[in-house]
Length: 435
Image 1 (tube, helix red, strand yellow):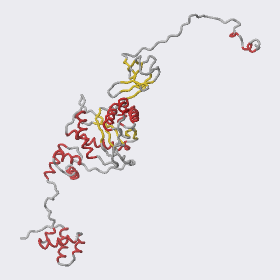
Image 2 (image 1 turned 90 degrees about the vertical axis):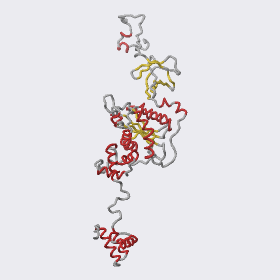
Image 3 (image 1 turned 180 degrees about the vertical axis):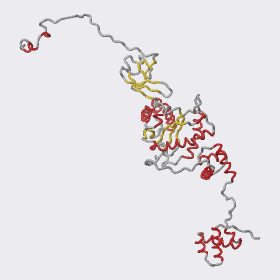
Image 4 (image 1 turned 90 degrees about the horizontal axis):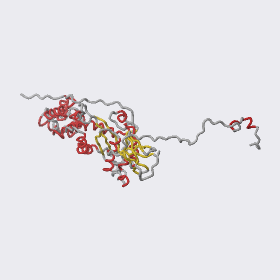
């Protein structure tokens, strides 16, 4: 009994046309046009049908696993691992981690379809186009512009808590090179205060040199309103002053969109960095900074760095004068007046200037109080460091007394002929001779 062959509509059409060619009712060219294939393919089909019969029009892989089809066990394992370890990972990132940590190689798009099918991922609709912001081309050379900002977040999730068990936010300070998209420096700090920012950039310029300019936020919600933000009112002023002293041009951005690359960096870090630290169980800020420097940044830069338009490094080396004044430049500077008793008040404390100084000091002059990163205070007047010592309490004001007269007449009356007792009419009658 002959085995029945089930053909699809397309296969039946193909068999019928090839049969007409074999019967010489149509030519190879006509058959090729009808089947929308090449003449060479028509000739191959003719040869196969002569040898194998009508089943030759059926594709050889029909009913069999394709050469590129992934085994069901691999799919099952991948989806199980995602549920257990990568439940909140995006498909592309999950694909990377499956290959890197579990030896399961799946294309991101294939994995995305699997995750949608398994209800582990939702296909996202396209967002409506928002306000248009003009595109700004990248700088041409590495070191020509650094974009800098800070981001408060629960970077260690619930693995880093306070005494009451509440997760602690940390501030990630980061700089990204505009020309290459490379993370040039990143550091977890308790807050985005002046001292933390100065420590960041002091280390930066020592290791890499001075960039041409720094693009930073002018107005930022977390800087103004965040409960952990410190010294925000003076941060921009102090930072601009320090950068100008170094010969670096600080450029305040007027909107988050203006510094889009650093904003997109933080979006990526809040997605990838948090999950990377979770996988290796990072629990403290010190561990987080070590992981950031030694593991994450090198891998990130290897993948996401782009080639700049021009080769070279625009960073400039620190001059001898820069190095000599580095602690002074990266200090919080405030002006204070010298009192009559040669004392200075600073942050509720009082300091007495010593008698011998490297320069002449006068009351009412204004000096500069420098708060260095190491916590020490320095009092500077006309580029001279003054010698001072702290007072245990507020000094008493110096009292002044009126001068006491040695002789004093009480109840004195002017005589009748005194000018005080002369009327205006009498004075007008006086002649020049009388005067």
